[in-house]
Length: 429
Image (tube, rainbow, N blue to C red; front, side, top):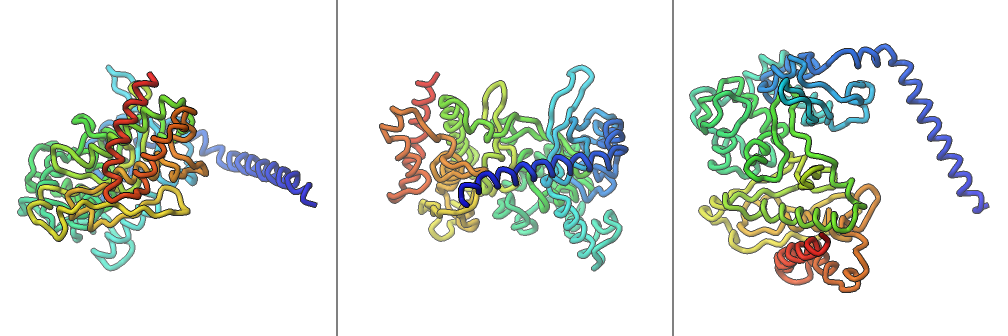
């Protein structure tokens, strides 16, 4: 009886595959009219489609002229609305064109699922009127997003603390940086909140509360060497960022030398975000192969999802001196049966000067044998060449970085791992 089980499973798989194809064909037939309409019309010029009609309950307007002029258009599959059911994160690939520069690929994000966007609308309405539906524009002026009017000089920590990961433990220095670098205003460059228009202030606060990723990209820009995708602009509830390249997962089975180089860059990112001249520690709370991408020309690794980033101001921690602030903190390794899971305490990340969280996150979720993604295990540095595997040094460093056996072992292992990957990378060239 057991001999026929694989055969039956094979037939079942083929039947399911056929049903899927037939189902998609039926959907295509049912949407034939919409299909042709989708290719003929540029929906990104539609104010309602990009939710420009909901501003100031939106993320900005700096790119609206480009959207309305038809300079931004979806790539082929992005035009098919019936496929949105598979695009839960609302991330699209698009083409952006300038008359003198030609066209280039960009990424468009709604910064949340349809349900999450609907939820924020309901919250705004309930806070303003007590009802789940209302005139959203009028309601915005009755919420905390409008509390900071033109008489308020600065955006202060006590107002926004805890709204999102970016401001889990904000310092005045961080908030001044966020306001000064806010890209959705023509008068950027001033840290004074009163210099923003009422609608601009509400848009900034809305972004800060709903999904602060645009503010992370603006405050720590790629032009200054930070490892994030470049922020381009927004219109309504559609944000445009630079297309970096293929996601890191695409390189999982790349040649060994390439994977070593990528691993070295990932450890460099962990170091840069932890220790830098600005004394801001940026802790990555969501680390997976999908949240990094690799440039096609320079091979540079870039973070493409920066929603869940805590920014701790080390200068403020040293000044306030909370309990155990100067004691090195070691993140606790915990085995998990899910993909890309991490163990951390936001309170501790906000109150210690020296923390190994970023090394732990990169080693556990991307590089070591504990990394699991899409059913694959072994991490980016799986199956090393025979001589390196036999030596055992790389495996030992990766294991100590992910699951340290010695006190403060991860700090030392991360340092040695960066140096060893540099050696391996140079030898592979």
